[in-house]
Length: 191
Image (tube, rainbow, N blue to C red; front, side, top):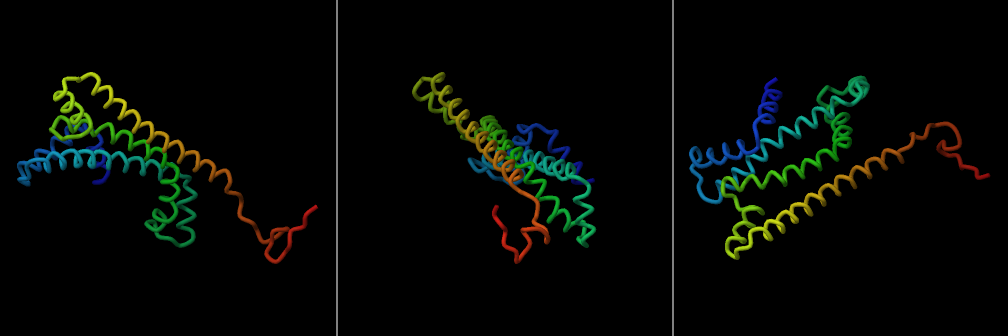
């Protein structure tokens, strides 16, 4: 119940609010100033929010599995925790891997929100560069192109992983039994 409430709370709070909270927590509670506080603000906010999103992805992936998987693990004498770790989680993570990789695209785009707390990320570096040389629009076009290329590469990675998982599921055949021409000790005959 506590984990569910925490995940729902962190998912419902906007990423920018999380960044501001961790940034000001760093400054006023921990007494950390300068670039470290902005870094901790961005990384802390992104971590809190995306941990909640990934936890929800994993939860939904585990609950989407057939109930027979859990029952089979318990039937062979595994504890509920062992069943979760050895039977359910590997299947769920394999099924959700493309979604998890796609979440990286969201994380990358959300780093631009660090601009609000003066974190020097790609967007801030671009605007700083443009003010020195007086070419704001071309610089922002290059920054947008860089975001597009990086996000497209991550999306491509998600598609490749998804295709490999589908191919692995198609090629996985039934386990050979103890009877028939594939039984141990028998030589298969060719027509």
